[in-house]
Image 1 (cartoon, rainbow, N blue to C red):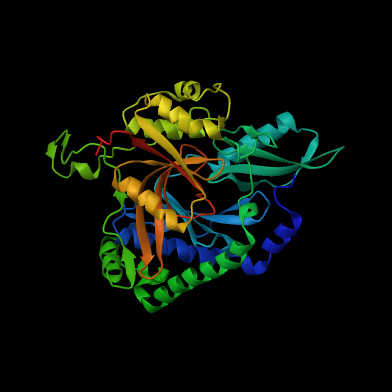
Image 2: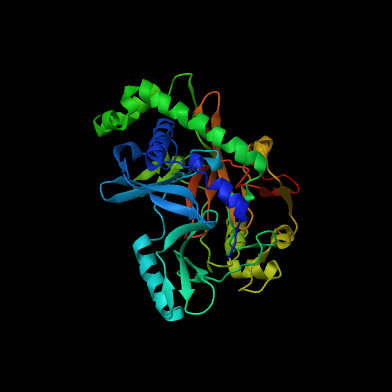
Amino acid sequence: MNFIDERKRARLANPRFSVSPDEARIDALFAIYLLVAGGFWGTKGWERGRIASHPIVIHDLCGLPLFYSFSVYRGSKILGVIRTAATKLLGNPLVSVQITPSLWSLGKAKGELQSLLRRNYAHCDAKKPFLVCHNYPTVALAVEVAPRRGAPKLVLMNVASFNEIRLPTPSPEEFIGEVAYSLLARLSRARERYNPARWEIRHQRTVDVIRRRRALSPRRFFSIPPQMRAKKLMRIFSTAEFRIMGKTVDLEFCSHKHMWTDQGWDPAGWRTHRCFCRHPQEIDAVDCARAVSQMILCYWRYCYSQGEIAGIFGEGRQDLTGLNNVEDGLEKATAHCFDAVRHTSLISQNWNLFTTEIDARRPVIVDNGGHYFACAGYGEYGFADIPERKLLLYDPSASGTPVALAPFNPLIHNGAVTLTRRDSTHV
């Protein structure tokens, strides 16, 4: 099955767009440096761990490498996952920093794929399976099978639910859920020219800093006593060359300043209490938009199950969510006390949409064309003259990135839905 025009795929397969694992590892390590120096929530103690020497490669549905996935370890415990670009065509060296372990196991998924092939494709020859990002950021195992008669076909299996993804799926332009598309197919000709140069500039700046600041080289950094690494990073990144927000803005619904614990009244308790929380999809293939809507509604104290939200949206329990049903459904769920507004074709100038909404303590639904996130924070990290704008995203899918900090990327984040109380008494 073709997910991309063959001539376009041939252009994008040019070796000059490829990123080596060593280059990607430098970008992943630098992300840790920046986030630890900035005290970003969820990365405390990461400087005491290590990142994987060899990444997992995640491909685009057109077959080209898309991401490298580096696990962050402290001892045998996985602290989080860093995804970096495997192709310069993405524009950003850093794709996302997942501040939780993944909710799926590659080894277990491979075993389940073999069981699926024995059940459904016993008379076919199967090639070696590989990971694909079929609906950003969700991941599936893909394998090409060749029946004795007929053309070869691609088999996709969700790495978390182990369900086969039947191809072709409905269009991501009309539905939200388990839909499959090629992310690289969305690249315009202008971005094919612009993104590689952007990647080169940011990666080279990273390499130059690590060469100039010898303490940041992997060999030197990991020779520093673990308890001293965070202070060392804070001293290096406190200079005017870098931009790190003093805090990452994230949502507070209540006005608490303290928190009661088993040990008594904790004056610093507000630092660990979070008003916004992730709700996983109840049905992995169809509940993406409903789970994100549940997160937003729960924040505003409207409590519904995902099945109830499907009914409010006017959909069956096993149906995908129609793109045009979300705004009306959210307004019905709030008894029309809120206005839901869709914002399309997000570009870099629309960064103000996110900062304005989060500063006003309003979470935002982020639409990447086929999959929904909830945005509950933002931050700016990187070089002072070219800082990276990042969103704190909650992903309901177990095969995606549950809670992650990701650069604001118009290729990926191409729409949003805001929910605003009509009388504005929530402020």
